[in-house]
Image (cartoon, rainbow, N blue to C red; front, top):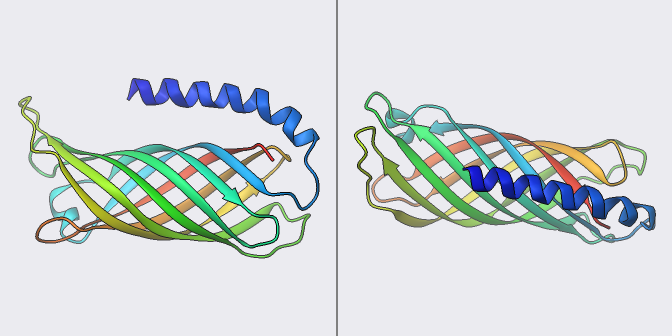
Length: 189
């Protein structure tokens, strides 16, 4: 986790230094490229909520949106933890998703921009118990779908909130959860 925090901090410093000059050169109607980070709560659903409690997650995001289309693309990487209920221990998730983002058309002056997002990814989960033992690492495919809002306050920095439903195709009953996240985006174009 410390490596993730250090990597995100370094990414933020680079973004702040690089986006200031890029934003000054930004032309109206140009492609949008952004990257940033996020964090929030992760709510287990269905059978998964019978064995785990609400947890937390954090991650990094990269997004590309062509100027002439409301459809863009996003790649993100997440780390998530959910504690077991009632036994001790937790599930530790690492996953990456590739998504299509539909940005609702709004005027240039609008600061709040709604979007829909969905795609697929690779999810790895490993149980870590309080007695120091660990379960076997399991990697599966999954899908996600959700919605959110971008809040653009400056031309090169924005914040966002979103919620996504994830359905991971695990043995037996699928693992289902909804992370609700807030994050920051740094725009390079």
